[in-house]
Amino acid sequence: MIMALLLDLANIVGGFLLAVALLRRIPRAGDEIGRVAGRLAPFGWVVGVVALAAGGYYLIVHLISGPQVFHFEVVGVAVGVALLWDRLTGRPARDEETRDAAGPRLLLAIFGIIAIIIGVQGLFTSDG
Image (cartoon, rainbow, N blue to C red):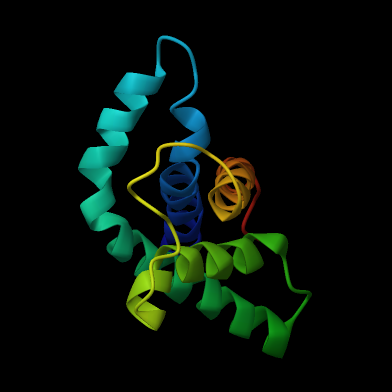
C-alpha cells in the first residue's frame, strides 16, 4: 500500500515538475506555480528515482504474477526516466533557459499533465 502511494505521489509531483512550462502560463497563478516549481526542482532527481523504483517494482510484479500491466506503472517509469534524463545521459532533456513551451519541452509538459491525471486517478483506485 505504501509503495502504491509512493508511485501515485511520484506521478503527481513528477508530472508537476514536467508540466511547469505549461502551468506557468496560467493567468494570475503562473508566477506562484513557477516559484513552487523552483523550490521543488533541486529535488526532481529524488522524485525521479522514487518514480522509477516504484514503477519498476510494480511493472515487474505485474509482468510476473499478473493480472496485467497497468498504466500507472508505465507512466511512473516514464516520469522517472524523464526526470533523470540529464543524469542518465549527461545531456539536459529540459532547456531551463527558455520559459516557453515549444518543441520537446511542450511534449514533456503535456506528458506531465497526463502524469498528474494518472497520479490522481491512482489515489482513488483500490490496490486490491
